[in-house]
Image 1: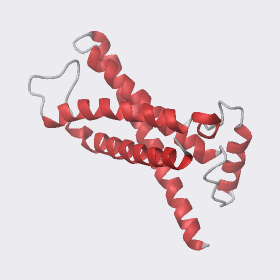
Image 2: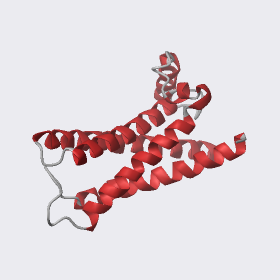
Image 3: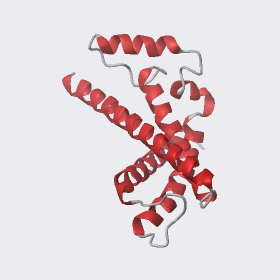
Image 4: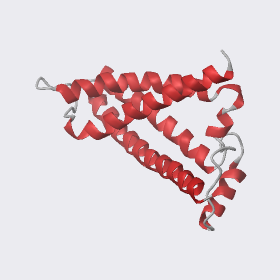
Length: 172
């Protein structure tokens, strides 16, 4: 597979994971499951479970593609020992300078957090599903909700980062 094909796959996976995550977040208020799937489960309950599992699979696949060839350092700069780049970007942000989109700084860290939140939220949802009916299911459900909220926060930061680059592009 050449670089152009690889990037096309990454773009498609990115779009798929973004649409799946958006659907899951926007329809989650209509999901009504606690310890187990209720007998009265409806469309949104089943759609959440099926699309959530699909989002986990697509998210893992997307993650595998984007971290290859040492690119993991761009998404997880703190784990790569590159906290200086994140610090520089934060300092620049306080001075009104938009951080670079690449280079493993703040925006890369936000993308990495978003990817990690998506995968861990999906994993916690699968754990809840597998343990439904048990006392542990409630713990996994609560963890799933916390991770979903982190996913939402990281998603908002990601959208703001992309918007700031678009505004910066229009200004130039």
